[in-house]
Length: 113
Length: 112
Image (cartoon, rainbow over all chains, first blue to last red; front, side):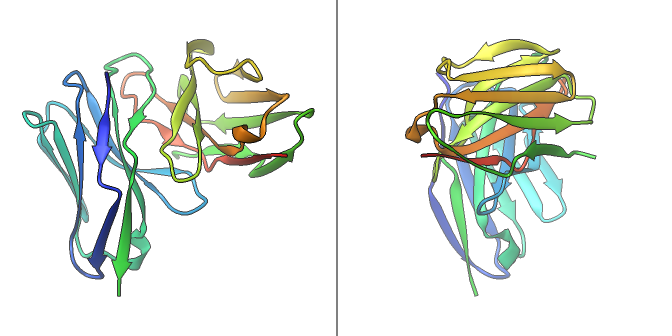
């Protein structure tokens, strides 16, 4: 079955890089996503990676995928106070249908001044 | 434009009330989703509509009744809810081919 694991908390100093990790169990996963949720808000899509890629960079965000270890990471460079939020890793199996997302429990990113 | 809108933003209802949540998107997406999110938990899938037809129901109790009147609109009809149904209800939409799901801001539901 599908299972996505994340650590619950990460604390970093403002200006440092944040690295949020995620592991998944289903090797059939086709798409892997990172969403950001601020308090009381919906989910904001940050970035995604297809399973045939191993890296994707988008401004301050870098996603690394290790398919062999089923490990996904999100690096946020130059972390700012506005990055404080819960970050969800999510996967879907679909390559052309419409499936729901399976989410990890979310990592609460705490920024220290 | 990647906007999904949801109304109302907040809803308080009694256990005997009937209410509806609404979701709208104008991105031409043909898949729409309802998720339920309890406090400090990840979202959990409830329903998936594909081309206006219900394709996935994750064993949701019948007191939740989804409806997709057209490709832009998704409703969730609520009847005889329980206090444990209090949660943030999130709507999402996607193009079927890429499946990247875009979420609305959610409706915060409180059942008294």
